[in-house]
Image (spheres, rainbow, N blue to C red):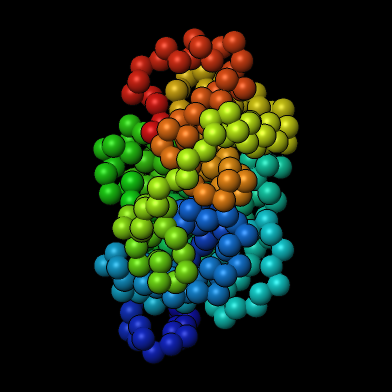
Length: 289
């Protein structure tokens, strides 16, 4: 007999149950924050995700949140369980993939809940999500505003689009998250003009972030990235997110569109070296905006 779990509050009495699996690093990117800001976000995470689900038409009983992070966290929060994982720079996200994937598999196999909300952009989860769905669990993916236009997203970032296409629902973290102290990356958040920056100083700051990242990358991941960049004009989303967060810490602001373009061009020049010019002759449809 399936065990019945009571809701932590009476607000969703009778609603179908949901458990969230959240990659702290992904949520930081989704909100346009540094990872350090997630300590405050965690205190309001249950409310934030509950409001986000409801805003997307999913009135569910969010029973528990699993939080995957490489930062030590002393917080003890109701209905939240922390999972320690290795930094992405050490293993390319393999440890979080294994931890989150194992929880997804066990929850679905044991019929622990009717819905699972996944906060991750790792395309390697597709087969695990498919398996969970075959067990009868509805799997929803936390996403940004770009997911509202899947045709465009397919052109801009096909890997992210493939993952989102597997979801039962794409749950957009939109403007309501501002009320929980988060600053969403997209949507109706106030847009502030970036302060004017000296071009040479900006290039120097970007170069410092890029060189630090490249120095810390293991050689096998460097080689994989070289091979990937030879076939596309963009850069992988995970690399893009990591560098944008690094630059945000240095500049204490988000980059403009042109500054992001410069950052990505500098990454390609570093990774590919003399091959970068040849790679830039690929069709414009492969470029990441």
